[in-house]
Image (cartoon, rainbow over all chains, first blue to last red):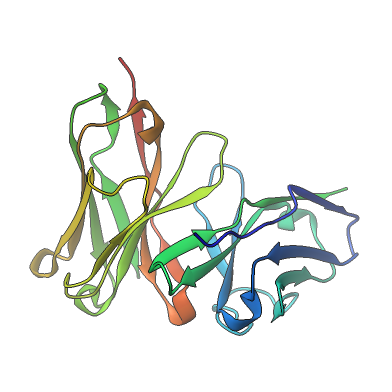
Length: 108
Length: 118
């Protein structure tokens, strides 16, 4: 089955840029979605398809995807961005949806 | 306003069965594919199952195949997840989600907590 690999944690100072990676074989050929989950809350979609942002998601959030790595980039990080972030793809071979293990973003 | 409201969670004994429901409102449910995603305490997200807009196509994670059954009633804007032979490892928050563009899940309910305990 398809596997997505994320770093367990990323730390960044306020105002700086956070980058969270998501590794998978030929992930650049897939559509990657990213979710933010604040403590005690349900996840919300922050990036979908080829870098699309749902209504209400700040422009500070962006996504990229090439080769074997997809990335979520958050510029001008704020305290409110502290959360767990998950990448996800639809694996057409297995007809299964796959999530990465999640990355805890800490704002120092 | 879009809403997904899960119900049916609670404390259940191993080996028993339960049915989770997801009531949708504020959007055209009959046109939407839907999924269930679960999250064990302190763990990450795990996809559970998918159902197409008309219920004709279903897909399950390998870990639940044969024990979980997903179905929907578009006349009642409701989706159901039946869990048979419940196991300790089924303890989790179960989220009802709506499929969006590019294979995303663009709307999530607040979740239903299932605790399996003897």
